[in-house]
Image 1 (tube, one colour):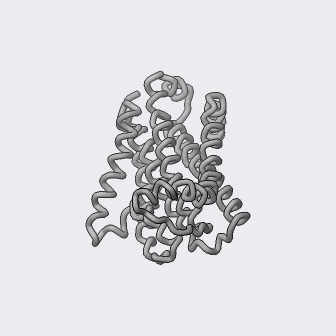
Image 2 (cartoon, one colour):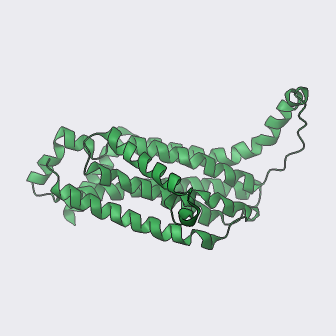
Image 3 (tube, helix red, strand yellow):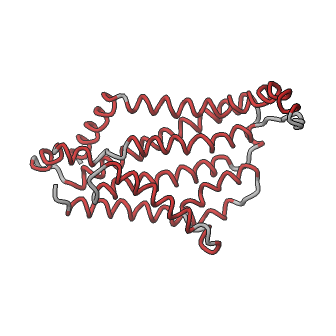
Length: 256
């Protein structure tokens, strides 16, 4: 446990020194602010465009903005934060393998599985903290300007997207145990998402796939029931566990 804690501290200090944690704090915080801000500014922007739209034969009526508008924007912004995180940390393991720094740690008695687990826990913690920050900021502003009850199960919807993000993030250490370059690792996560999305075109298994969790935005308008995501949640959790165990086993066998 001491080795794991020491490596976690080392990982945290390294990320603090490089400023990545500060950057992601700003990114998630800004996205949290942008959601209600864009919703609040939408009527004003439409008024500015009314003359141009009228010239094109389009008449825009009055727009009613509620917390639902802001929560819908939340699900448009958070995927971008996830993509940035995946790209930024695609090299979290491969870079150290290439530099040879992990060999020094292992020769000093550091267990491989502790190294990989610490990095995975760090990534999960960063994604969790970022989601909590973005969600809390959006919720607070929505409560101030409108009423969050006008949006349906916004917490469950946000949790579903958060879980899908964990699944994609869990692919990073699993792919890093096999591959040598950060680009290949990132492409592996993108390939897994694409495969899940394409398989989702098959109606019989659509509700069982991780990418179905992105449809949780439908919970906001009440056009979907929370129980329809149960299978996808269970299977996504199983896939996350499989990715972690695959990463640990493969990294233990990897020739550094």
